Length: 75
Image 1 (tube, rainbow, N blue to C red):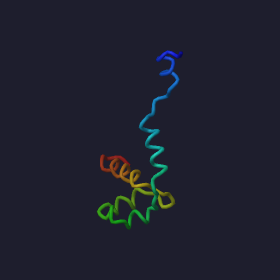
Image 2: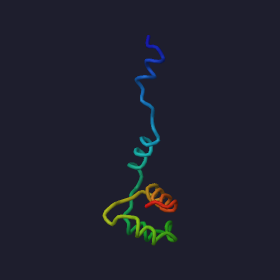
Image 3: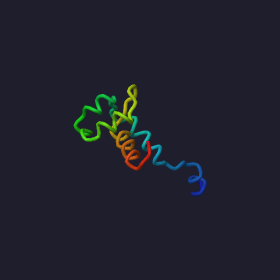
């Protein structure tokens, strides 16, 4: 019979990064044009035009993180 410590040492903890990565790959993605034209970001269009890349797709979660970081003073 395995000791509890042996089992704990073999099991890797699930990090929030791993969860975020798994969730973001399952979320729908949208182009910059779609996001800029969306009702959800109607008041953030200028910021989205400046911050998002033309040839990349983003989930709402990713866009919200980008805008949050921008609002805190980072790009």
